[in-house]
Picture 1 (cartoon, rainbow, N blue to C red):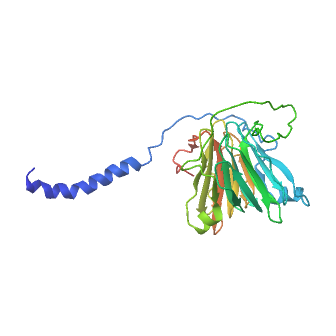
Picture 2: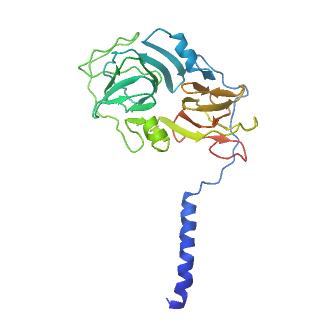
Picture 3: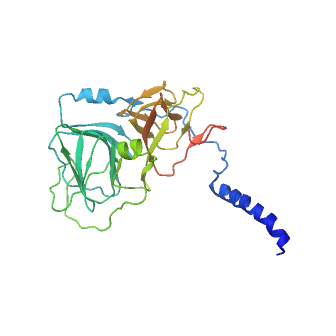
Length: 309
């Protein structure tokens, strides 16, 4: 190529590379569709409610160290607040085909997961265990360890051969052999120390659990003014979404319900096909753990809305 053409080409190439890079990273243009919604919004079927306040949950079990209460129950998940008193421990168990994960609301627990070094999970920790990997936990310290635990609905735990199963009404445990286990990867890690790694360390939130069944997403953002009630957010087909507030204050708008203001430990639930939005509120940072099935799950937005709200 003649030298006289090289200088102009050298000037143009960086711009071309930038255009190519932006084309690769740009979000695709939104598509339009007629999305189905039931004429009568999906109900809040017990035990599900728009808002369950942690303060009310704890008050119902005042004076008790060992208790469990189901807060969420869907086709996909059961979500329970569980308290274990000082010195209490679980049996070693595992789940056949799905991860189990939990958020530590208060206290401390020693978590033992086969193949991992045992660790102490304190307030704010997120912990997960892949399918078919045995694990156990034990409360350490002088106060109960309280966790919000999410696992697949309808599953009964399995136990290693050396353990004695806990009886479950209507079920029996039979001697078997099996192969194959789940694993950790770049997204799915044994734990996240939210206070140390995110709040103090400046790490981003993002996916904590992501596999073919579950998407548990840590969403952290500064508070914003309350949008107009006509800003509906989005909705999902065929499944509910729910959240646990991990930090600060949040506002939720769920179709058919008044504006919800939630604080740390509160559980918020949106039935399938109902419009909903979730935003941090107040002057500080707000964080929620959003739980949905079947990633990447479809979000239907209002035409003209900012995708991602």
